[in-house]
Length: 86
View 1 (cartoon, rainbow, N blue to C red):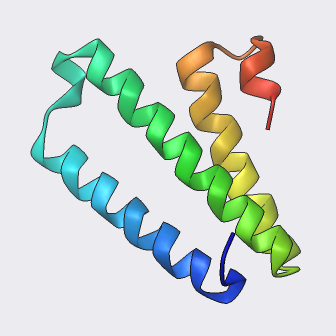
View 2 (view 1 turned 135 degrees about the horizontal axis):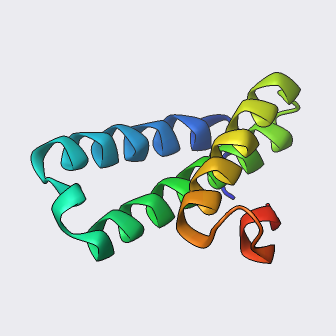
């Protein structure tokens, strides 16, 4: 993962960029684009979770894994094995 202390900073920057890009593009009009955005958000939150676990920040890790599960559920459905695979 590189330098664990810096990884959260970089993932949060990626999250900010994703949110900024979403505000510029109306993904609601393109279901495939919306799905891709949600997959990217799930990936970023999962990386933030892993970073928090590495840094022994349990409260942050819990918040990030819940966000990961949320976005995976939106992409794959609540009962999908992929949604619970985080």
